[in-house]
Length: 382
Image (cartoon, rainbow, N blue to C red):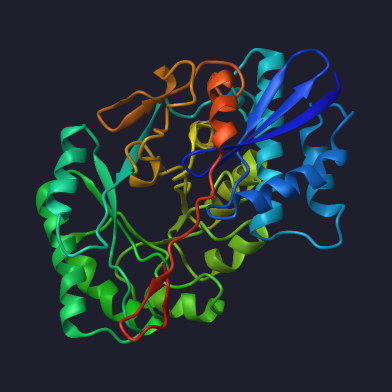
């Protein structure tokens, strides 16, 4: 079997799909994208195409090594995301050729269901109760909220109180039986993280995500972890096991690699094993499309230290283009009581509606991350 063709599709709301064809008619799908930089990753995917075209798609590890290491400059969000899309597509082909889901090729399932959570906002002053109640009514047993919107390096007491009060409101709706994750999104300075984390202990978060920017020195992350009475999670802006090791050395409790950014299924699996050495859990970051989620859950079902899975159903970014909109069968993404059953279909376990993808790609998208400003006009972290 040989790889014959590489196609990419920019599809709304903000996704990029990759289609890898073979001379035996088996097709694999991947989702290589950086939110707000989809065209840049698309260019990288096509730059790398000569390295795989004409090659055996089943030599997945060989392709991973060549795609990552054959260039003198490697890593980072763009190249790692392009690599991730290829890796997902090749695992999809491998599963289809053998007639089994990818998790069977990763050693077999270690669980029958996985827990998933939904996003509920939180970066605005009002509406958190209603948003959380909506997800509870849909059967979810865990939600994630943003801690705040733009916030000063040393925030006012009112802003600090606002963060805590919104978290309290969410906990009141959830009760003691459901999970609450709180995402700082790198918006908070180390000083404010050290102030806020002890105050959030009362709502007993499942974890607090990305309390500080990932590019800060690892000693700063360690100081935040050491000051925190709640579990710390990070990783959506880390792209390899080499990036994750310093964070794990600093004591994070939860690793959050993204299947479309951190080198795909192959590297997610290795990051999970690395985290296991430290007693840390895996909770993959995944606010993207159906292929990314399908790849992520294949890892989840084969990973002993998996904790919980993010997914983008009803996410505000998806307005008009729902998570399941490009699937021929939405059954694999049926969430019941906040859980997802083990996929049994071959490869990634989903069937892409190719006609819908090609129609959507005719319109494409040009999604960009919002630009936020502080009251004084200076740039704020989004």
